[in-house]
Amino acid sequence: MSLDLLPDSATPFERELAGLSSALDDIDPEVIETIWDAWRCPSPLLPWLAWAVSVDVWDDGWAEPVKRQAIADSPDYHRIKGTVQAVNAALALAQRPTELTEWFDQVPPGRRGTARIFVETTLDDVGRILKSVRPLVMSAKPKSRPIVFGAGEMAAGSFVLGAGLVAEELVIIEPYAFLGEDADALLVVGAGLFTEELVTLEPYA
Image (cartoon, rainbow, N blue to C red; front, top):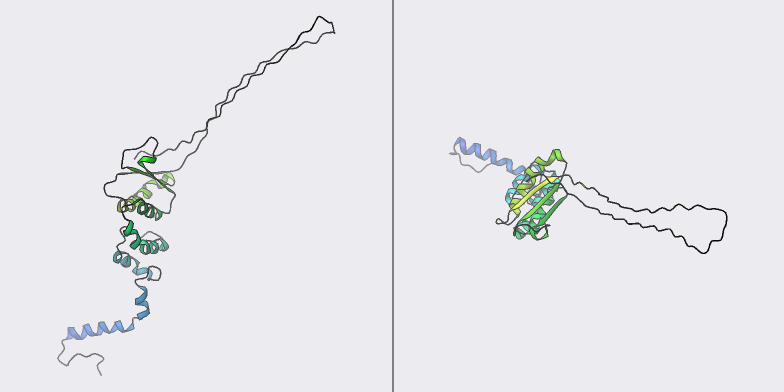
């Protein structure tokens, strides 16, 4: 007895197609419900779900929790795309300490409308980090705003400058002989200056 509804006149191609389609009966409907859920979708299908919800930048090298977070955040991300909040959300995917400085917060102030991004990482990883962070930021930032990228290790140092003046007087004690009243004094003058400066070294961008 045939398990399909094909007529006796069906072609071999139609019968083959019906046989392949019968495999759909083995699919669990409950699994289908999870496909559109970023946190329950089967791992092999995550790239397809990311494409479906318009994740702008995707890296197969990301850890699975990062992939799922990018998918879950995509709808809200597109609502704020082109803002500082969107850039910060994109930088969070890098999983590195980052610093975003807009032109008016730079010292001295930068060119109007520009910004700088610094990603803290080891020196031997600078190239890879910039290659992965740049697409994230470029998709999130306002298209008209130039951004300068930098990466490296944070360096801190101290500089101490000191000065002092010592006045010394030699006093000789001799047998008592009253020669009238006399007063001796010791004058000590001291001064100190402490200056501390934080120096940040960034590679040329």
